[in-house]
Amino acid sequence: MNFPTSQHSAPNTRPSIPHRLGLLGGSFNPIHNGHLAIAHQVYERLQCTRILFIPTGDPPHKQSGSLAPAQARLEMVTRAIAETPFYEVSPIEINRVGKSYSIDTVREVQSQYGPAWKLFFIIGLDAFLEFSSWRAPETLLRLCHFVVVPRPGQVFQSITKMPLLSNLDTQALRQLDLGAVDQVDIAIPDSSGLTCLDIPPCLISASEVRKRVQCGLPLANMLPPSVESYILQHRLYQEDRNRTHI
Image 1 (cartoon, rainbow, N blue to C red):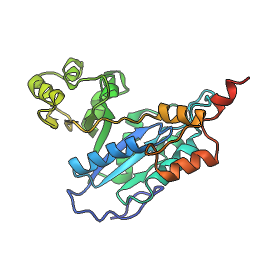
Image 2: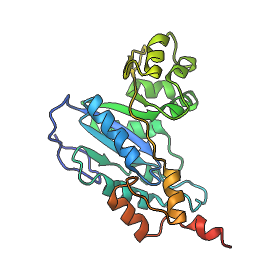
Image 3: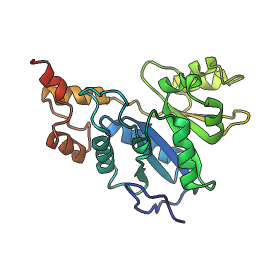
Image 4: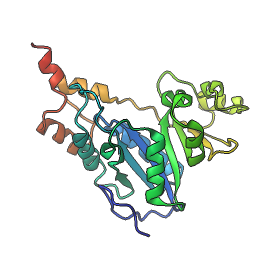
């Protein structure tokens, strides 16, 4: 089978359920070991064939020094996943002109990969709780199986209050919050379904990485070495530090 052109196209050799594509979007400002840990957990637990990283593009307004240019963020993701054959990166949102919506990205990925691929939309619990306000949320639920991962300060039971979802198993979600189970699969009428995963908490944040860069502090175990080298070489995330001395 011919795969869509991407920044990383090494063949996948892992025997698993074929044609499961995990979609992991975000600013990746910068990509860090926490992002990679989430991708690996979803890949293993849901037996994905590949994980596709999708960095956001540049905002239409003037960007601040806290957001690296889209091409730099794309390059950092490319470097971070270079040694992992089942990871790929797509410039779909970077190449798109104007405001980017998840529904447009999903439809474009679907058209590139074809109907043989089932899409798994990886999302943090905090973002998923705002999902009802997204563009065409019902369509997104039909096109993708959503994979919700934990976020600090949030509980999975909050999902039961979402307008788009009803008659959920509150007890199962409570058991997930308590750590008694590590996965809850939810069937949703007229959709591809929803999986809530209890995975180890991510203790790394991109904002903390940027703050450490600005202060000249070490970044040990926070970033892949290739990403750290790129940040230092191109002096990323230092504009805010320079501005404070004006």
